[in-house]
Length: 144
Image (tube, rainbow, N blue to C red):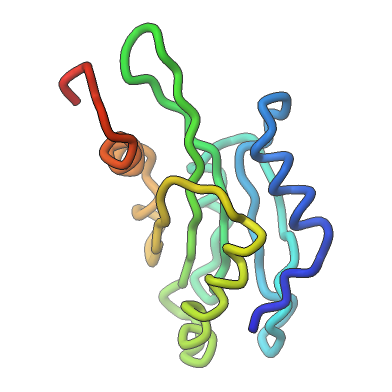
């Protein structure tokens, strides 16, 4: 079981979800290599590009992000994504625990439209994620 009891995680989650905040992502990392405790590493307002630049190839991390896009000239949508990052150099035992720990993290980062399993930074490119969000959103009236 992952320990997600740090109150800063819940605070950052609410900040990312708030319409009044510019914060649009958060990043959770393990306290250390042997710990199953997750801590808030950082938050930011630079979108998926900024978040993906902070991911470490030797770590497993969790992210949560608000993605804004428009379906047409008159509508702006904001959706949330859950990110499970496993860097290419992550230790085998840590990789093995990620699927179980994801459920624990989702108990805190509860509301999201899609889950992104990222193994490379390119998995967090905004255009393909927006395409997935559009499909997950149902009706599209602009032919996309």
